[in-house]
Length: 110
Image 1 (cartoon, rainbow, N blue to C red):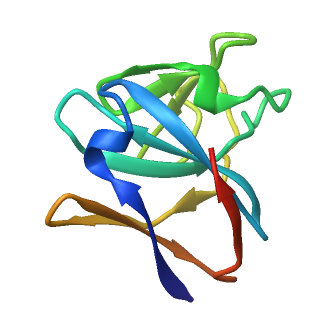
Image 2: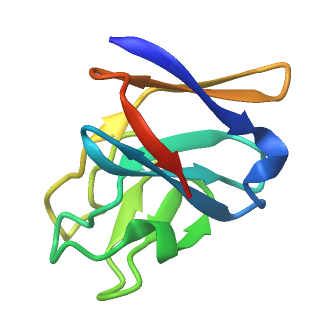
């Protein structure tokens, strides 16, 4: 596992997301209204919808395809739905966002 620097907190709008293209696939990095940062695989566990295009509210994101709500801190779908998407560790140090990946190769930041 390795930590990679992916940008500054202000690079992600509040209630928004950005994409990090990594060997693990596209990872959506979210910022909520309280400036907490989360990272999930950019695929809803239901039909693979792009979570990065969903609506962030509290500590959840709502998938834009079928309105499934996914917990940002675990990747788990909210009941009654079941399933999960991969969740990645993040940290913010002095305004810089770090993402923990198994393979530190990053293609680009979107």
